[in-house]
Length: 213
Ligand code: 3PG
Image (cartoon, rainbow, N blue to C red):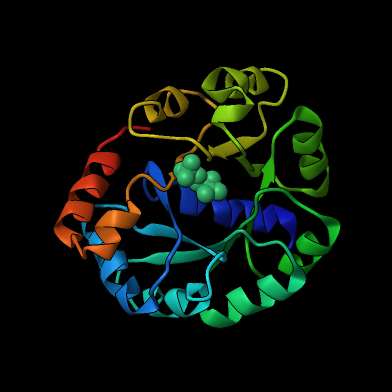
């Protein structure tokens, strides 16, 4: 898959809802319920971070959930890409981008939302063909004002800011011309997942889904 095609597909994922939940799944047994709760609230695109032993099994379980579009986050190595693809991930997210990682995603036909934090990083990704990127870490990197500053010199690059994004600050990002959606973990707090408070998570998802791009 070319980076250009990957970017088209990533843009489609970003258009599904204003927020992509960033999920750190500890127990794969609850993954299906978690995905159903988020999809029911109006957030179909889900990012499962490869940060726990349960992550790949969680991706496989979530891939079965009707209406869900499941991706793998925290992709760092070609091995991660192959495992994510095998588990059923239909897109990938990375905090940054390395040559090896991009080559692996392209070879494995996994659309990549690669991370950039500076104009030079964003330009390097664009040079390769990635026009849809993750702005990470968004809040600690200057937040919406910083991302707004990217829009004028780099109008052809669209972003999904992630890292420190909340219900309160998401609207400032979503109002920007270069933001397609935001990513955030606030819609699936660990305590609510542990308590199997699926109705509560659906409420948080609905609140997030009501944010307007
Ligand atoms: C992450 O890497 O965990 C994501 O960027 C989500 O960050 P958040 O927990 O600040 O939403």
